[in-house]
Amino acid sequence: MSLFGQALGLTRGLRFRLAVSYVAFFTILLVFLGLVFRQTLSNTFETQMSSVLDEEWGAAKGYLQTGPEGPNWFYDEKDPDESFTVRRLQRVYMLADTQGHVLQHSEIYDSIGIDPPAQIQAILQSGSPAIRIRKDANGVPYMVRSGLWVDHEGHKYYLGIGRAVDYNDKVIHDFTVNYFSIVPVVIVLSGLLGWFMAGRALDPLNSVAQTAQRITHSNLDMQIPLRRAGDELDRLIEAFNRMMTRLNLSFEQIRQFSTDVSHELRTPLTVIRGQLEVALFTAETPDQYRDAMINALEDVERLSNIVRALLMLSQAESGQLVLQKAEVNFSELVRDLVEEYQIPADAEGVRLSASVPESCILLADRVQIERLVTNLLSNAVKYTPAGGRVEVRVLQKDDEIKFQIEDTGVGIAPDHLPHIFDRFYRVPSADPEKGLGLGLSFVSWIVKAHGGTVDVESELQKGTRFTVSLPAGVVRRPLPETPAFSTSEPLH
Ligand code: ADP
Image 1 (tube, protein in one colour):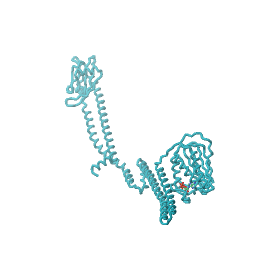
Image 2: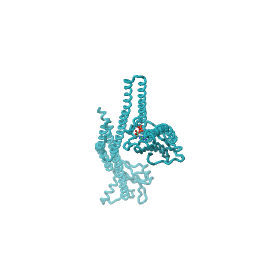
Image 3: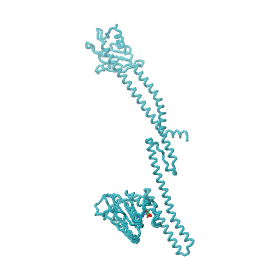
Image 4: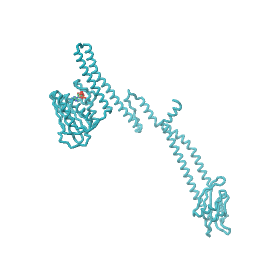
């Protein structure tokens, strides 16, 4: 990777972005705090200074009186305290009459600018004292308080008293310089700390990524060990592990499916090949060839049935087979199919009967529901020896429709019962000519796809009972009396 690429990779990394966010946050916070503190300092100084000036202005009023030569300072010159105070007050001061004619002023006041008559009159008219900041020729700032002074005899004057505030400005300036020269150092340090902390926080993520990279199709059962910190990362690992378990299960199903398929297809293919070879080497007359062809064709037919069924089952299981739901009169559908099966049942010597309500509406995919009933019906007839009985019942209870099919057939041993819904599962003793072992897989999928359940109870050599429960999925209409739903043991 080029240097530029490396730099680009670094800047795109989560660690870099976390550290940068940390630095950005710190910078904004420090600058904001600095500015707030500076402003607070300046406000405090200003309030303090204006109250000091208020006091001095009041003190100045106490020393000023109107004598024969106009207003003047009166104090005990021998009293060092008083002399000192008055000298201090006289440092920055000016006195004018109400017209704005300056009567007295100090040198410093002159340098910060004598108030023009218009300004004096405006301040006097406003009725409240004015506080202003002025700078002298050297740029030293002064705070000046000016306003109306009325002497004992009721003469009105304009009095301004000021004080240098350069010390305050210096403190604020020093604070600003010191603070903002420390800020970059703090930011650099916080950046380093952020980089270090982000690295530590992301370390487990890197180890998770490394483990995830080691997972291939051959070790899908691999799990990332939990850190047991109970944090977000542990939840991520848990979710990842659960996803791996699901993936593993799907892969296992696919593997099983292909094993089952190749196994199921091999047998009929071997049979066809054998038949054709025998015909090729031994058949002599056209009739013998014809017989061999007919046999081979029958097996090809069986093969294409398997392929068709497999295709549909794989489509169904992968969710590609979409149900076309519509209102179906389930009673009618069951009656018709039972009628259809009457002939093969008679031929097998099996008595087939149905107990179905007049009408029973179900929101379902008609084709699939027919397949479900047919598969169960054909199994019942197929696995019931001559002289036996098959009974079909339909019952609607609230929003649930129950379909029960009970036979007095060969039954299923308890060991096999849990597996009969598996793909290609056939009870070993079952006649190989009788089926593909896919019928019940279809039943299971169709029931699940319609949001229902299927149960089976069976006893060897006595009989089997399948019970399918389906949600009606439609608003129930009044139905004629339905026969009571039997919960007795399977028919024997
Ligand atoms: P098949 O096409 O072999 O009938 P199914 O998936 O329909 O495949 O059934 C799986 C197995 O369950 C069958 O091989 C059979 O042994 C058993 N089975 C299904 N229905 C019945 C039944 N009514 N009575 C006895 N055994 C049954």
